[in-house]
Image: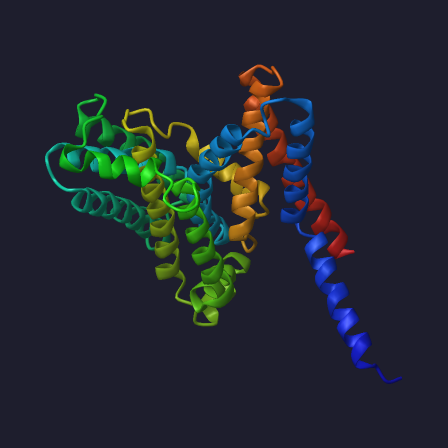
Length: 332
């Protein structure tokens, strides 16, 4: 029986719609939209310009790091050190600028610090066979300790001659009144999405997460790729640290504490599979948005903030449950 062109197009459109609807990211996005609609009617302050501005800005710090974390998770790894890396990079930036160096030198020092830490993690994991959990858990403690040493465990709030430039970098709104951190997040998400979807590096990342042994046999440079993704993860934490320093205008040694859990939650809720092989940049953004909406809504609804961990943990469990149900249905 001949198949017409219209039937072929209709089948492709139906297949595309089915793939979108069956993704975890789609349903998480629906949850974010429904939550926003509900909160807009349930409270008087959620839909205000100021609150929405704060939500979008607060999302960015978790989302930017979640982009790098997503690459690590796709390869089947994990990075528990991102919160401490953010703290150390922020402190390196602050101490360098406080010593009288310009913002360019401070940012370069912070980024170099992030890349060195990422390379250290990656080499231990890829070439020496250390478990990612152990390596990054150790780095969580090391990076936080180094931040305390660098600052003498004091607050840094004077950033030398380029003090105002740093505050404008993180706290300004240069384009159409949109907070600068949001613009950085969008640009980094587009770059990450392009890399994952259209580059050989992205295909290799997915191949490693899908089956590392098979990827090795087919010529994928597994070890260098794994080092690279841990460097990208640390770099994303370093970038978030630079931006957050400019936004806060001060650095303490407890900045970023516990952030790794929110970042991992954002990636997993957004559709990344902890077993590896699955994840998207858009999913990381959506997952971070859901976490921030949950955090923001607790105060507006008069719910004790201590419940935040329960809601986020529940969202992670539901996300994993959704993935298991989907895999079960596909295997039938």
